[in-house]
Length: 202
DNA sequence: AAAGTCAAGCTGCCGT
DNA sequence: ACGGCAGCTTGACTTT
Image 1 (cartoon, rainbow, N blue to C red):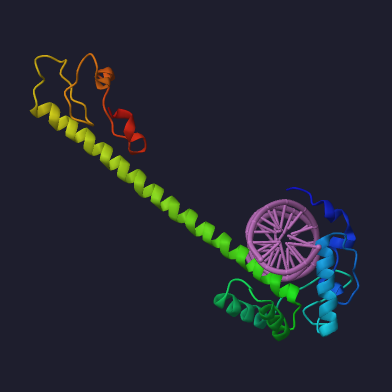
Image 2: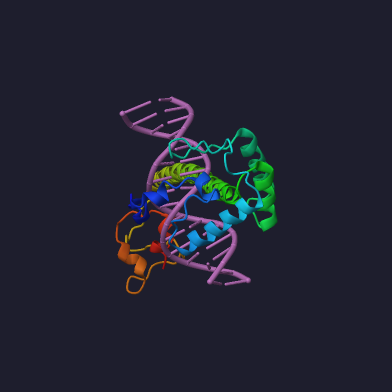
């Protein structure tokens, strides 16, 4: 785990969400901080709903924020309709309805998208595992079939008097002992490998 | 106590 | 320059 350089500053990491909207913590040093700080001011100007809200159980300077079931439910409903908060109005409106800060709504959507993506990745992974197993089984069956066919071929087809006549399995041409590369395969058994099917071609 | 969950912070990238 | 987002991380809180 890579250490976060900014985590060395307690004023940043221990900054409470409630503190921001109440104008308590203004120690942001980067552009983003300025941006957010502006947002907080705007909200506290707009309404003082954030301060002293029951969601922000600000005990002993430790943050504790858990969205209520109602809030989560409404956010889920909004997420079902749209996974992104395209218009600024939507964010503001949701925030007003849920008595949250717009930043909280924004963060909730970001985290929600991350969760969805993670879940989808897990689903995809499982699907690929199943595909892999099916293909492995099928490959095994095909190999067995090839072996069986070879056996049958050995029994019913007597060996030619001259062992120099060979047929390329790809182009079905009779091998030219001087030019055709297939003749270089010698007496090695021929296997069809779907992943390297070109290997035995002319 | 360890593992899991979740809100929120920071950084970097991209589009406008 | 600014806003939005993804990715990663942190820390409080909950569940096992």
